[in-house]
Length: 103
Image 1 (tube, rainbow, N blue to C red):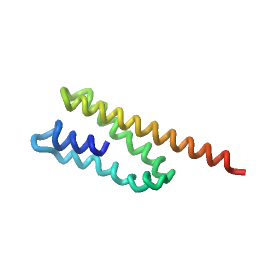
Image 2: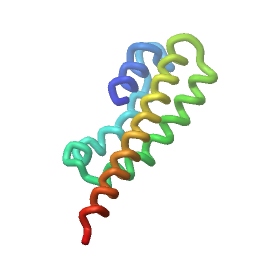
Image 3: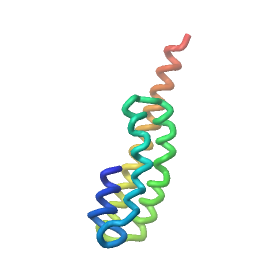
Image 4: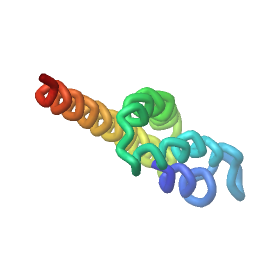
């Protein structure tokens, strides 16, 4: 999602010619990278909440924009929903495994 967001707002279909400040929208996605690499359960939990503004933006821009921008918006929506599902599944499996191991 980080690469898609940067490419979208800087080169592929920016809101303004030459890129836009909207590329900064990917910064919140960089924050959880360290926690994800360390498999911290808390990071997976709050990342599943962080993706919803990206889903909303993708749906709004996918419905209102045209051409490449709309395709990129629907791509962002798909990736955000996939990330949510992956985080939710990971948390559920980790909690189930912890429950089975407890006495």
